[in-house]
Image (cartoon, rainbow, N blue to C red):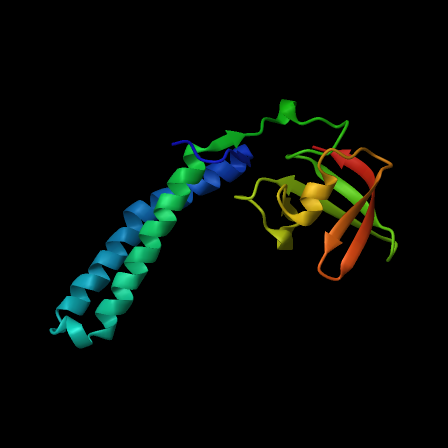
Length: 158
């Protein structure tokens, strides 16, 4: 069964592929070694090191499955597909917060690449979703827990 299509840049896809490769080759071996060491301590019914290692193994396998699914459903956004007419995934958008008279720049990315601390927001986030499809000069309203933020789109770039 096909999963939900994930929009991603070429750099984002490469980052996911590198993380997957490291998880499968390096981290799996590290966890297996921890399990082996913990088993050497004897009785596993009261062995916290063994329990921790098994939990870490389960989390690692879950992350590997998630990465494989994201890569399988990735739709790479190509530079020449990115329009400058209206905001979409792959655009850098400069907006003006009308309440605080501040300019903010966001890069709209797929959910797999979002990193708000780097200004990369998901197209599925409240701000990203509100900006998608807007044009320079338009004012968008974003519903947030504290109320509504109004942004004016100032610039759209690649």
